[in-house]
Amino acid sequence: MSDIRDDLEKTVDRICEAHCLKEVFMSCEAGVWPQALWQALEEVGLPQACLSEEQGGSGLSFDDAMFVLRRSAYHAAPVPLAETFLASRLLSAAGLKVPEGVLSVSVSHAKDSLELNGSQNTPTLSGHAHRVPWGLSCDHLVVVAYRDGQPCVVLIEREALAQSRSEWVKNLAGEPRVQFDFTNAPIIAFAPLADAKERLLCEGALMRSVQMAGALQRSLGYSLQYANDRVQFGRPIGKFQAVQHMLAVLAGHVAASAAAADAAIELSSEAPEPFFIAVAKSRVGEAAGKGAEIAHQVHGAMGFTREHNLHHLTRRLWSWRDEFGNETHWQTRIGEMALKQGADNLWPFLTRL
Image (cartoon, rainbow, N blue to C red):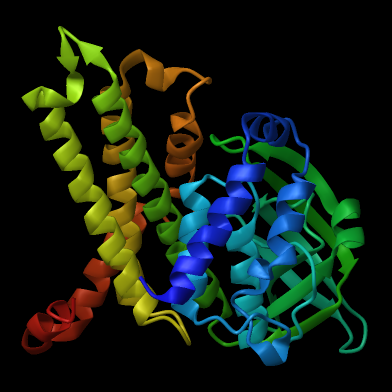
């Protein structure tokens, strides 16, 4: 690990160990914003990790920023760090200034329908955005809307969001998801971006893949520790071959997930690489289901209690795997991409992995 990665890991670990406490998770699931946790992240500039120094960021590389995201998911940090990264990347791609504070994005929900109306100087937003992560806690929201059939990146401030909220729910992990119904809502800025919708979907899928890889790594750590600590029939359960086999399978899923996510990160620093992101999201999503199952099996009844920290990870795995396209969606995309290559180009296309 490089010196930068080592410092980043220590920083994220220190902040999360101080602020990702059981009472914080409980209050977050009750709808309380974890101000102390977010402030600690802001004090070291981590929410701006995807921005260049010219944009007011920390100047980290994209893979270092994704390392920060993975490590925050390792601790199940209940803050929209991924959403802030994604909004920053989308605004930068459209040439718009990235505001300070907490950012969120729409999640490319199938039922979303957003249109820009009004004049160039006084545009307004109308339509619906479903299941927006942390929609009531963000200072600004970034969405993709259409103006005369052209996709645009749109920036909306908190005041307009407060007036447009129609429904507040929680996902399986207890994270807030909000539906907004906009009717000629004022916006701060917009800019056309031809691939805005595809970029939002792909980069969102990449960041969820990175988060799931981090949560899976911690789930493996918990499982190994429990298997060594839990004694049954006079010896740790980790000494039993059946448990060792389950742990080996889980370790395989963790390694495969990390490799798939790393490959997608490497090729998506400037713009998302759809094929590798499709592979990452489908592979990590599959690992999320099987890995969470194994982790709970190893922990037995203890793993199903709220007192143990495992559920903070597995409930996020189950939630994140369905956002920005589930495994079926991305596996279908892989098949479509492969079919477009033709017989002569199929093998070179697949062996890029």
